[in-house]
Amino acid sequence: MKPRILVIDDEGAIRDSLRMILEYEDYQFVGAASGQEGLAIAQRERPDLVLLDIKMPGMDGMELLRRVRETSSVPVIFLTSKDDELDEALGLAMGADDYISKPFSQRLLIARIRAILRRQELERGEATTDEGEAEPQPLQRGRLVMDPARHKVLWNGALVGLTVTEFLILETLAQRPGVVKSRNQLLDIAYSDDVYVDDRTIDSHIKRIRRKFRAVDPAFDSIDTLYGVGYRFDEQ
Image 1 (tube, rainbow, N blue to C red):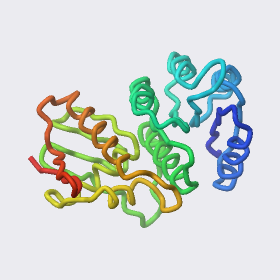
Image 2 (cartoon, rainbow, N blue to C red):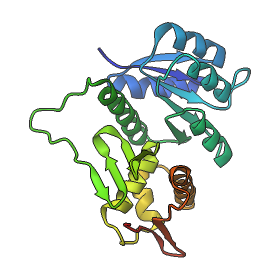
Image 3 (cartoon, rainbow, N blue to C red):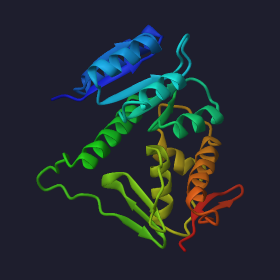
Image 4 (cartoon, helix red, strand yellow):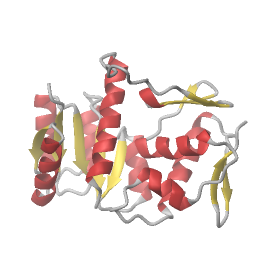
């Protein structure tokens, strides 16, 4: 059965665009023009994933996420034109799985949807591997363990919840400890060429990664900043 994706956005043009993208990628599209309508559909139809705009009149995305999380663990990706780190941090803390700023590319959106749905399948034990396709092996660097197949990150055995973008950035750094990666190199990993993103966006991602690791280990300092150059992972 095709995965069902619920898109909740008060802009009709955004819903129409996402309908074309999702149906082309062989997903079932369900649309809602308001938070109230989206909540009713989410409770009634049990979608496999929700794409949710934050800034909507009436019930906004934050309140809708809070209501959804009372009864469901359905994956939620925020879609927003707001470039506000506090909103992003709050949304992720409330239980969003990822966060994509408008405008976004089709390639980036679909990559994140696939990664999250794949993770859900693995957690339920439903995922299959194509014949001849090797499952990505976990990456271990000192106290860090990253399992790409299950989108799982451990530090000293403690689970650290990262978004898809944060996972990709950290994985890129951890693959070659001690090697400096510039902001532009990390942007190439996280975003497609047809979307303009300021290179300082990487700084915000790094801050959030550090914050999440320090929540389980206040002494975490394995991501070094080389001012004017970039970042590197220090294996410990």
